Every structure is written in structure tokens, then in C-alpha cells.
Image (tube, rainbow, N blue to C red; front, side, top):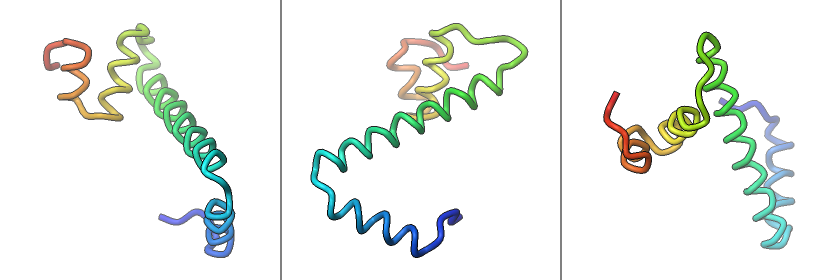
Length: 80
């Protein structure tokens, strides 16, 4: 799904190519933070009835980002 006009997308990538490595890294880190914030918001929204503890929230986030198997190994928890 494309939500950006092709001309705008082309211009964005042109500016990224022209930017130095430090700027591209900053953009990448900003996008990573935004993805995590959106994922956390989605997790919280899905558990409105019973707010999650910090540990449960971190586990849910790890499951979404890396998969359940990896999250369970990292957090040393049994399969649900």
C-alpha cells in the first residue's frame, strides 16, 4: 500500500541519498523510535481491560518485533 505520492517519495529518497551518513542514521533511528511507539500504543490499546505491567509490555513488544520464540528465550518465560 502506498500512502505517499510518487513524486514526494522520489524526492524523499533523493534527499536521503544526498544526506551524509550521520543524517541518514538519525532518520533511521527516528523511524525506529516511531515504529516502537506505534507498537506500544497498539499493545496498550489491545489490553485496555487490564493494563499490562512493564514486564508484560516489554514481552508483548518483543513478540511483535522479534517473534514469540525469541521473546520467550530472551525473557525466560514459558509458552502461553
